[in-house]
Structure formats: structure tokens, C-alpha cells
Length: 118
Image 1 (tube, rainbow, N blue to C red):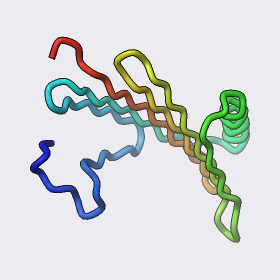
Image 2: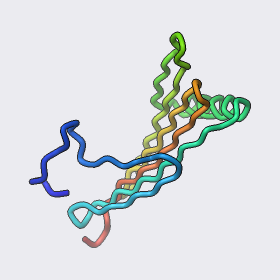
Image 3: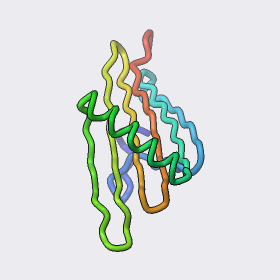
Image 4: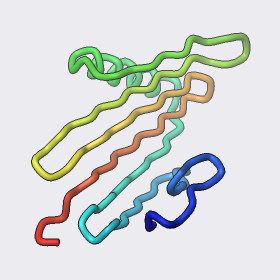
């Protein structure tokens, strides 16, 4: 992607499918590496509840950014958690999205890295 390329109609630089398990890596400008892995899991009710409790507890303990949407009518509740960690030459961003309606958990881990020696 160069600066001269237009953004999509939604203002996105790129879209990456995340059904199942995916991994994507790209280098921009020769010195910025972007790596993302995604994992989508549909769990049993018992495992989903345990996972949701574990992630909510982890988020509270670390004072992470969270967003909760309560259940409304036929739609179940949702929980999203964002964990950002800055390291010396990289930024680690993890997200967890939990959907009560179908016991779906989507996890992402992205790393933005300044490539040394470029």
C-alpha cells in the first residue's frame, strides 16, 4: 500500500477475513511489519461461560478497555476487550470479542513492528 492508493469506500486500508484461524503478515515502507492472527471459536455453553468469566476477570485485573452490550430482545449480550502493550520496537494489540447469542469467541493478536536495519 502506498500513500497514492485510494482508501476503500469505508475508509479502510485493507480488509482481512477472520473466519476460522488466519494469519497475515505484510511490510509497509520497508520498515514497518504488520502481523495479525485471528481465531474464531464456537464453544459449548459451559466452556463459553468459563471463558467469558476468565476474560472479564483478566480485563478487570489489568484495567483494560472493555465494551459490554446488554442482551436486547432476541439478541444476546456481547463483550469486547482490548489489550494494548507497547514494547521497545513494537506494539502488541490483542482483542477478545464474545457473543452470548451463539457462544462465539473471536480473538485477534496484532503486532506492529519497526524493522531494525531498514
